[in-house]
Length: 218
Image (cartoon, rainbow, N blue to C red; front, side, top):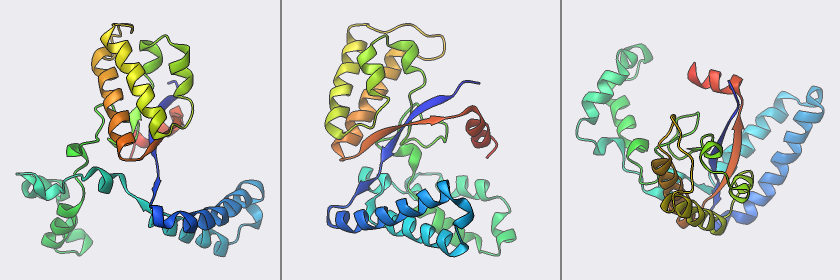
């Protein structure tokens, strides 16, 4: 099974937290480097410190769900019945009352109804990722295929969206038995425009066959 390529959103740092994140990121990078180069020197205290730094950084960024104003799960008409079926016997086995679990679940963002959701999500299945793997079989354009190998800023995303629209409208794409080329290119440009307008960048991420198998196994 070949490796797959997908776009993942670049975390969007809140404007008033940029200086804080720079300091935290520098500390986290030092610990990450230690873990890679000299793992035997990494103590449990260092590992906990790295986790704490990552949590603090997460609090300084705007989540895609928040930026996209994804509706809560409870906005679905049948959400309670669907949730009860999904939970099954979890409530009893966890010791948490079913109504409390339902309340928590109901407040979660509904990813499948998010305005920024992709119809071609990555391996993780998260709809704010985008599967880039089919692109090379559809578009024979060196500039486009090279561009997706790098992190893109919002302005670069908008320029790429325009280029993909040109391929789609003018029919400059190959037919594929695996994916509808027109539908795929349309969704790719919509994905890029939506998140660029929200201030997010995208970065490519390779998913190996082993990682994909792990994802499929849960």
